[in-house]
Length: 233
Figure (cartoon, rainbow, N blue to C red):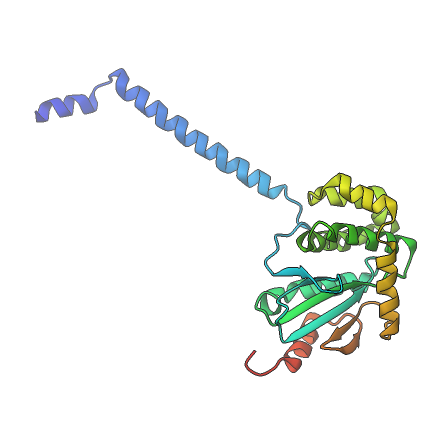
């Protein structure tokens, strides 16, 4: 019995060759599959982010991220064409894991579109994105700021529609909303509300109702939040 096993193990019979070939095919297929996944992931736009926080819409219709039960509420007035606003958006993103995702801070966004007609158009587009859900709004918000460096042309209708396709919004609905100017009154209402609260420039933000002007660096923003944070939060 032992000698037969040895002869079978060392023989060059076709059965052994076919088995090895099948194994090689399986391994090669797995390698190709992994490679395709790597390529697909690498081709994803770095500006389209997977959200890791709670999102929603306030009773007044404004988008927010972070728990509504958070001890600190940061209400931001912003213009998508404003470089300082973009920097502040980056800073808010940098502190998200420590403050927003942990339920310590809720961030509410309001448009204060006053710099140029393109600002108004971008704000209206963001409101159109909000119609398709708060998650889509925040992804669109990030894309708008990520592309502001190309100047006024970043917010042409053609590009605003391209950004909508990039985050897989319903194109027909979005384009109809943007082309019709359906969000003009909402954007103007945000501007009027901001002015009534003393907003004169962007970014202006309110931390639990206390007005703050300008984009703080990350370390200073953390200090400001920690100073206002209730003990034990």
